[in-house]
Amino acid sequence: MNIESSSSLKQFNTLAIDAVAEYFAQPVTMKEVAECLQFARIRNLPVKVLGGGSNVVMADHIPGLVLMYRAQECEVLHQTESEVTVKVGAGYDWHQFVLESLSRGWYGLENLAYIPGTVGAAPVQNIGAYGVEVKKFIKSVNGIYLSDGQDFCLSAQQCGFGYRESCFKDELDGKVLITSVEFTLSKIADVQIGYAPLGKMAKEKGVPTPAQLAQWVIEVRESKLPNPAKLPNAGSFFKNPVVTKEEYLNLLSKYPEMPSYAQDDGIKIPAGWLIDELGLKGVSFGEIKVHEFQALVLVNEGGNAEAVLKAAQNITGAVMKTFHIELEQEPRLFI
Ligand code: FAD
Ligand code: NAP
Image 1 (cartoon, rainbow, N blue to C red):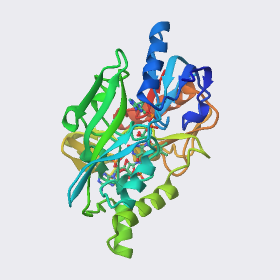
Image 2: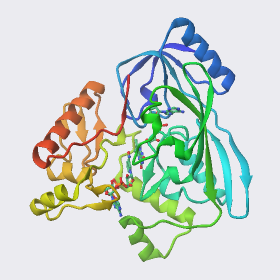
Image 3: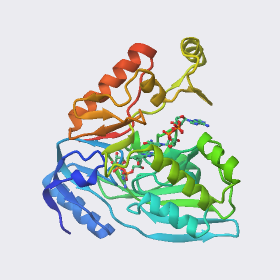
Image 4: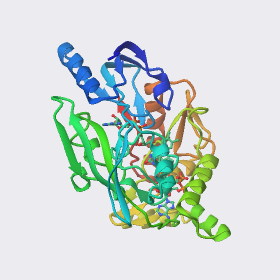
């Protein structure tokens, strides 16, 4: 097993931070993972797990061993006329899995097309887009504890999924390597076109097939979101805040144009709108720029984690001062 020392992770994080890992390995098999864990144990090194690096802010120097697990199996476990259960390796590219599932007539993931990253990271923040969250399709998550290599299998219910949340960001944070995810997908199309851009396209073109819907999602995303390969970014930098009805009514009286969406636990206000309302679109904080068309995305123009976090602090401070809303950062610190 090749374990590199002083390895640059610049190409492995979409913010393109020039981070250096003390040690870095890309195991493909469980035997290789075990070798890596043994290597770390002997040297008393912390072990950190990286997927595609599209939701992390990396420190300049990352002590310990960074593991990027590459297994990419896609195995059918069970199927009936109406649904299929598949087990997918954590290293499988998420978008490729969405396309693969559609090509095999397995439906449900179409709204989640074009999200960067790996299958293994999808449960970590319960990825979501256009009104669909991955938790709906997850049957179970398999992995091992980094401390002793013991394996586990958690049912979807045990994963504690919430809005961009799960137990992997909470009590299991930094403690496990997810090795595969089991999904149950439908063989019957049921397209979700509730979000405005998709609804508008359906009005113009008719109700799409799941594959067409995935294509629409790709088109909308390509037109709105900066490509990290050209403009390094980590997607939405802040989660959308959910406020109480009282807070919402108070804000609405001052900002009648403010968009909002009712949720079970309160009212969701788009964080991008709050930042845009402050006139911060296109504004730079040192090497970090608020994207010109999408205020929720921070583009890195050569800065490091410190620069990113400083810019984020400026933005959260301004939002707090004007709207009395605390924005929560979405990408995870990788240190
Ligand atoms: P990484 O960034 O590498 O890791 C994220 C976290 O998961 C880290 O804490 C890491 O330690 C942990 N992790 C990763 N793999 C494993 C594993 N195998 N076992 C245990 N822990 C692991 N997110 C959405 O929800 N919806 C979107 O629509 C969306 N759009 C995006 C658009 C752009 C342009 C970008 C750059 C990001 C977007 N994201 C979106 C965020 C990101 O793509 C997702 O969160 C994705 O799931 C991260 O996957 P990754 O493999 O890159 O994870
Ligand atoms: P958008 O359509 O401009 O909408 C702005 C925000 O309003 C979104 O964040 C979305 O919340 C919310 N929203 C819009 N219509 C809604 C509805 N009908 N019901 C409930 N909430 C609604 O958003 P966008 O920036 O182009 O992104 C489109 C989708 O892709 C969103 O779902 C977004 O989460 C996802 N996305 C996520 C990331 C990331 O890094 N996490 C990056 C890019 C895009 P929700 O975010 O809760 O859906």
